[in-house]
Length: 425
Image 1 (tube, rainbow, N blue to C red):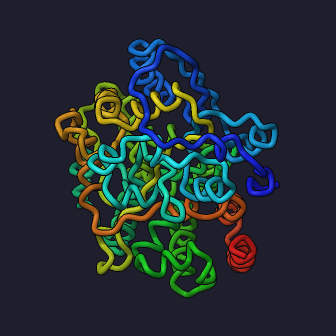
Image 2: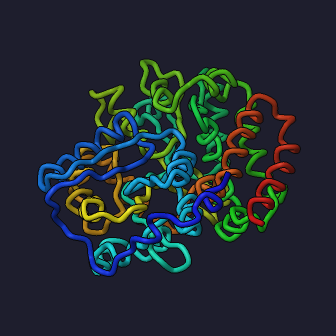
Image 3: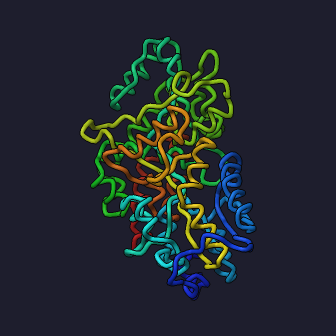
């Protein structure tokens, strides 16, 4: 059941307003739905507690493992949350087109929004020319984590192209090492980390124009360049000695555990392609390591050097579904520079708010992530995050099948082309 069918007349559509949000409130609860858990939620709760203390309001967080499904259920029951933190722009567009979101141009101070957020990020939070969401937390998905001391000990140079990466992997295997830690985190949607590899390979091998047309289902998954990305990934997974633990290692290792082999003594793997939030996993598991000296990242190597500098990103976008004074106040606080500066200072967080000072990033790795995002020549959301939920879920499942049986590739690409075309129509 789609959100469009569920939303006949949403509360949000009837509660739009014409004036900016108040910055204070005398109380009231704000009902928020989102995916964050563990350290991500703890940091959010710490930032939210300042607003609660200053305003007398309260934030009622409802953690979800499937935001799209939970919002569909609550909207069908005429009980939408006040705010939702969405994990991708595809869901924002679906909700906006269903009439389930409050436009923010009548809720927030748009002069501040314009000053704080670049046109590119405002566009990513808009649907049909209206602003519905603000990206409050972003991640760089083009980061490959490594240990500089381990590279130095092996005499290994950081690769800058895909050919360099595979040549380095061959050398590591010849030296008796394992090049890659690679995971499909357990739980709902466990194939997402594998689709991130394909997104980077398509963007860095085919360029942004073809990437956009592929995401929009204007290019089939069987296109030679798109298929080439899958072939490269499959060759890496299947290469003897390339991946720690082989297929079982991929399927049974969580995303937080994927960093551990890099920093063991001695290391049992050398490279881990994972979004920039992996820094939080590293600092949690290895608190004595020094950022920059003991751990760091290099950009995901481009297949075609002409597309070097292209970056895939992820992001959490906050939207309003029910307009209340407390929700307005908390939303204005959450998207502002003060809240996001405090969030940055907690670690493991990157902001695209231009009023957050660079010195808020107190370690060189976090600062390098922010620089990588702001200095990228081309930025695109991970492909799965930009596709309809039905396509994204089918892709997750297809990637899990692929790592277990490479002969499924042709059938998966044909099936994904059909699934994408059906969703687009």
